[in-house]
Length: 455
Image 1 (cartoon, rainbow, N blue to C red):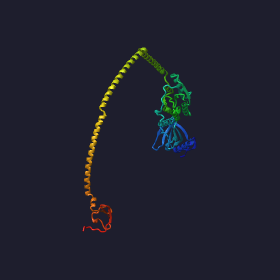
Image 2 (image 1 turned 180 degrees about the vertical axis):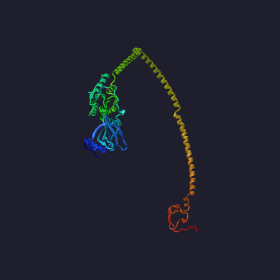
Image 3 (image 1 turned 60 degrees about the vertical axis):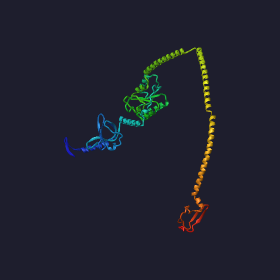
Image 4 (image 1 turned 90 degrees about the horizontal axis):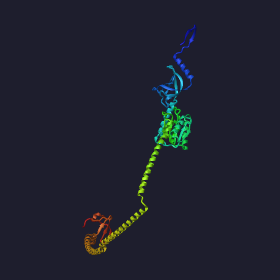
């Protein structure tokens, strides 16, 4: 709407905006005045409506701005945004016309700084744990008294000075070999992994300290790299980590054979205490002296006892000669007794043998055999006679009922071609072949007439 008015007596044209026009032109100005920009800030006032869009504010310590991230942009987020999370966004500057709110339309959202590193740390830790790199069964025991200590760290850091000072204080004679590496920044992780591999190949030490001083998660990140974790796992030499402060934990700490909260603690962990070892050696020396004295005293007592038991060789020879004479006499008596006893047993055995002389028994057996033979011959003749008489009777009885005897009296046996005996004339018909068996020989005939009656 346009109106006319006066200002200091002059009429002027007033271009009056309504709210919609103002917001629209401001939005167009903002849309055209700013390209897509990157912004790092902290999330607050996060809202997740059912539509799937995200609405939140981004703030720093002095200001905040409203933001909207539509559903098609947040579907592929690799993490869940939370209030208080530090994020890095790529956004378009605009205005929400209905309310006149200045806002950002978020095109891309990712964790920023320590948040992203912490998420990467957690993901790698979970994956390596599932592979078994943290398994306690794989961890190697530390040597009780190392021959040489290898220290993998920065040569200019405070950690190496603390380790050397601690080792020299606790056990000055322990050799120390420092293997210099970068412990922070790009390429530090591969350099540490390569040095662990090289130390194993050189074999100059039997325990390794992997250390650096404290710092932020980003400063300690080289010790969270997978290549370092796998190098520690593959090491044949035990590795003790002393990275950062007591509250700092890295992936290297979980894979290492043992973790110490600080570099100084790592040096104390792997080194024997000189005072403790001196005291132990003193106690062992005293105990060894007492044992040697006690052993010497026992040996001296044994020598004294042997001296008392020791006899002059001549006397011992006399005793042995006397003992030999006694044994010789006992042997002779034993020989005579054995001979007498053996003769007595032989005489007794001879007498028993005569009592059982087989000649007498053989004479009686021959007589018995002669009698039995005579009785057997008589019995056999009698039995043969009886059996001959029985057989004769049976032959006459059998002959009386034998069909051959019947045939001999003029009878015949007639059979058909199947060998069946013909008892009735009606079993045959004219022309049938028959066989007639006589007392002597057989006749093969053919029926010319059948007459069933006996007339």
